Length: 437
Ligand code: AMP
Ligand code: MG
Image (tube, rainbow, N blue to C red; front, side, top):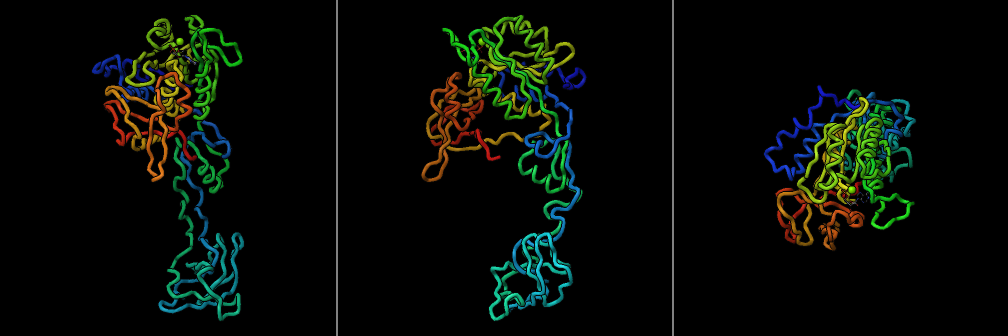
């Protein structure tokens, strides 16, 4: 389980002590993020998996290359290999072709002065040869085919088109660092080193449930005044993308006893618990009382939009402890709070050393209203004009319940705490939803 014991982890009140400088009504985003960061400890529970199963998992040890890559000097081109000492500086060079080297089937024998071999990409460079001329630069005119090659003056320089042993990676050098979330290229690199299995952190177990008497699950009738529970599905998707083991605990009504039972159950089975709803002013009171018994939880009002209320801390039951994120109920607020608070914390718990997502600057296609004193995450649509310049505009109404706008958007426009109104053409920072790998 988690190493959140009292000796290694500061309590929330220790961490939030510094918040007295701020209006407790609005904890700045950066500050809440840093408190969360300091509070979280990574799990440390390692399993070995085959390289295919390691995709998207967190590497749990440095991988040191056991071999040189490439293992031997070899040709980067189809062409002719020779020793550059034979090149004539100001005239064509004619060399005798005495054999052929294929990839995986080298040329056996010595190649002497004035001689060359035909060589294929990836074939071993015979001893004493250091240069390859691609075949398209050569001619065999005036020579019986296959017996000699003419290298035009100045067509190639010494050492060209040869890959040196160890030039990609030297034996003993670190190939991959612990904490890396393994991507397709990493699987290929591991295979290129002949490594079949790697140590990874076990998957993080995350339990979640939705709270609210008005919620109905998909498949149920929608009674008057009720809404379908969409948060469990967005949370499922977001947690799945992070590679978590997911425990979906369904909907829990606004009832303190039912909530307590759900929290205890979640706590005993998961590393982290995520709930949605029930943390805004009206609801929070009965949750707060129950939380005070179960753990160390702060109820924040974050200086942000959407997603003002946020509960964070840890709770314990029967000797098991779990980190807790109480996200707001509104569907967009859930996603934004997840992405900008829970995501980084969960990655950290998973042992991942993930770089912060890049904020890119593009010009705003419209005027955007923004009050200083809170961070705004507006749903944005990034488009490229005919002149190939990118610009972004908000999706329109930014209500925290409008999930459709999250679907329409392809990025978030991140308007920093101190930022005021944005004028058309001004640069704004965005985070893209999709990436290449
Ligand atoms: P709350 O934070 O519980 O006050 O909820 C704020 C708003 O979000 C209310 O309109 C709720 O009906 C709505 N809401 C809460 N949970 C969900 C959910 N799981 N799916 C969809 N909407 C929700
Ligand atoms: Mg509610």
